[in-house]
Length: 464
Ligand SMILES: [Zn+2]
Image 1 (cartoon, rainbow, N blue to C red):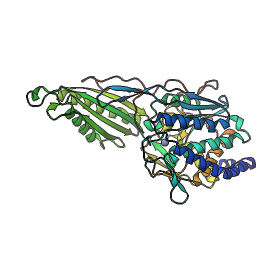
Image 2: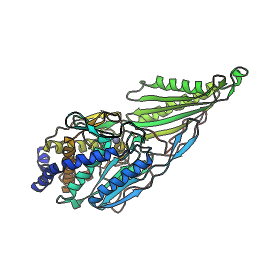
Image 3: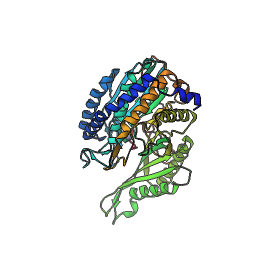
Image 4: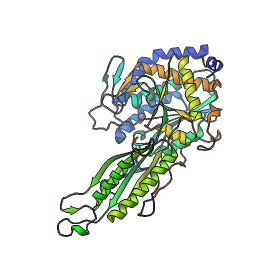
């Protein structure tokens, strides 16, 4: 940022007063993180998700704005017997405020966690000094508290009327956003800028460029036979799936930044039966769209080889579900702005590239530059030692609130960041965010030997 811009980013006296007042909110914020963490909202725990959602709706109601529960389309999982099963998702929460304002911001987060109902990790406890340990305290119940408090603070600031916002809180981020991806896309097309509340690192640094991710399941079908009497007529699908997995492992490391992770190979049964079903579940991370196309071609080649060699048929389900989010100029400018706001508040914000993926990937694919680690500082995510650094609650709330204030005042022009050609121009101000089909996820059908790779099964769960 230039020196002049930096000085424009200093809070005005009225803004400074509101930011200072956040200190008295700290104990209420901590209590809220603890209470929310104690509600188990594992991605598969529907009752817990319902309870968490109604708790959130009560809390967020104080912001005003139009709140609704959005039903999400069902997804699919491949069962161990090779069949597809439909899975339902809990509704997402969407809140809209001044959708026709000049500057439009999408704030996103998730209310599911990776901890299932039967997890042993259900309660909060004091951790190292100044920290609280608990399920989802950082990822991302603490982040949701930061989102709520910063909007609460922002709404009281002079000039707030120039900025419209939409909040989306989804139930399925930890599954790869299979149900909410379409809503994210639509929101990303509506907004000039995205703010997502994944946790920052314990030292405060943010995630920079993110790889894209894809998740696939190979279902190989052979021919069962008596292993003693007619072994020669059998077609062993477990061996085929295993050879396919080995082929993926060999691809790993052959192209810069692209990784193949064989997660599970399953199938088969008694030792006297040639197995007719083999399943290989695998994931891919990749830095660019070109890498995804390369990986796709390689998988297609492997599928064909597997089928030909073993005399089996194979189907691949899945797809590239989150596109890469590079540190493109628009994202870079938003980071620079965020960093400058941090400076004003006494924070030194660095960022690091990551292979992890989140809703920020989806927003970017819709042309919406975003910073996606505006939540609390925390660590040991997805483990029973997950913790939040308590002082970061007020610290990160001040950061988000001042970001919003400076975008509303025009000190930072969020509107110029939209990326032409990515996800289309922002929709006109009468459009409402959410609810339209995504262009990114196309239907993909099953593959046959020699016919190349199928493409996206739109709703297959992917993990994160
Ligand atoms: Zn998360």
